Length: 154
Image (cartoon, rainbow, N blue to C red; front, side):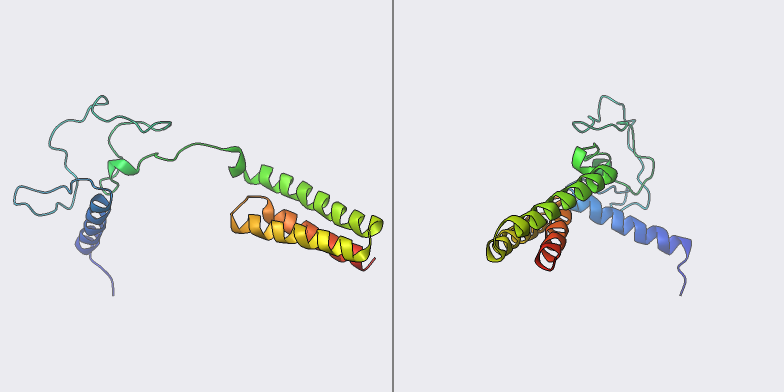
């Protein structure tokens, strides 16, 4: 069943109103008090009236579409070192190789039971860090597991 353009606009207006209410913003109303289908400003908005969020890299002008509330623009824009997929992958691979090497070295230099305890602690620490969403923790865990397997059966 297809929706007519009017039904789609009404559904989008209801969604926009729900977003406005959830963010504590006033819902745009027409003269009769009903929610409007479009956001029509009652007065001209200048750059001085809208303060950009701290650290925002976006323009502080009005929103480009009528269905996006002004509070949703650029609130969390920025770049951090842990968000670079390439860097996290390279560091993760390096961490996996180092943890595998430590596990194999433990099996070569220590007794089998001591090395097994060390690798077990490494894997548990990696799983705990994975549960806390540390970016390279899964790489560490996989490296320690593979190193433990290689050390045990080599």
